[in-house]
Image 1 (cartoon, rainbow, N blue to C red):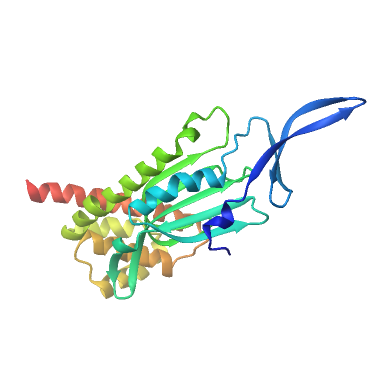
Image 2: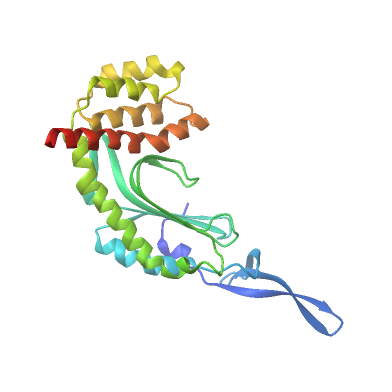
Length: 262
């Protein structure tokens, strides 16, 4: 594991793949992505592949993140540099859930030179986030794009990062307070239980009793705790619940908040 941003900023170049027939070199429709500082070939890609370097992404992202109080958390460079995983967090905006339990607003950017991922950006407040894409928490924004020459949006990475940060700010300032300040009704407990597999009902019920949630925020955190500590991490049903937990609880809270205001 590498933790310096400079480790991901190594220079790369494109080298056409040429087939030699007698004295004439013929283009093959492919090119090599070569790491210049080591002369290692990172991949062989089609000519349709658009090179977006880690350096381009970092130089666009780092100043904006820093301006908004973000700090580098970790950088993982995989293999010879074929893939990079970068993670910034916002330590001044930690979301306190309970004693010794927090969710951290973060921005995670992945990039690759071998086609395994495009330029992927995810932001939100996470309890768990791993380099393999596992997320438990609240996703404020997702951006996924392939390295394709016809993909115009790859030319505007800076604006994507700005929008990502703005979405995360909205999450912290607008959505979280509503969940924290709005109480749920008994019917929401029934609907909450129905989100989980039948065989986990006793486990979820025990967690509800132990934590005595009062607000939708409390209810959401019971759900994330069950998912992160008590359910099978390799199960597709677990990941399915993770994806819909926050949007569902938020929908309930917004509806109740409007009723209360009215």
